[in-house]
Image (cartoon, rainbow, N blue to C red; front, top):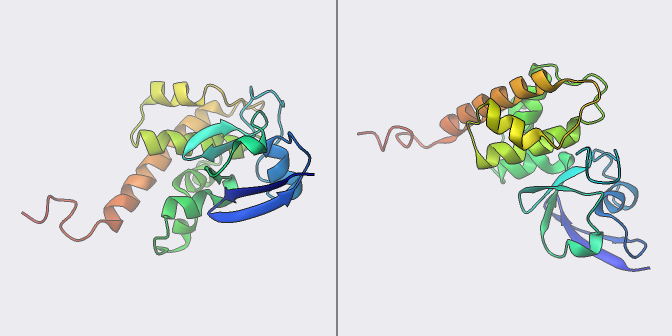
Length: 182
């Protein structure tokens, strides 16, 4: 069996697994990262969404051997990746703004799809820190929720954008937010 060496959640990981194994199963069965879920196995539902070099990717359709040295972030590593090594600013800072917003908006019902939803939302906010409803709908169209929490998901993404904006403002050096104190 081949040995895979991947960068996952900021750490070099090694696993021995069958040739052609999808990234999803390497993450779950060989690295014990169970937050990424199996949904359809065809890349259509979004439950298996992870970030590879910051882009949302369906891990059920990507062979682990195709990842190479690119950086994989799963739901377990999302908050730490967003901090980028920054000091923690209290209990809320331990969560990614999307994770915090999901809790505050009480989004999940069954919860099965939520890791993939959060990963797609986080990628959207990294590209567009203040998305409108149309941008949210376009970015989230590939993530299915059988419970139908789409309105709550959209509201949570708006809240996550506000949380992230507040954190950016509080993390800015004195005077940086107002053009250097002029």
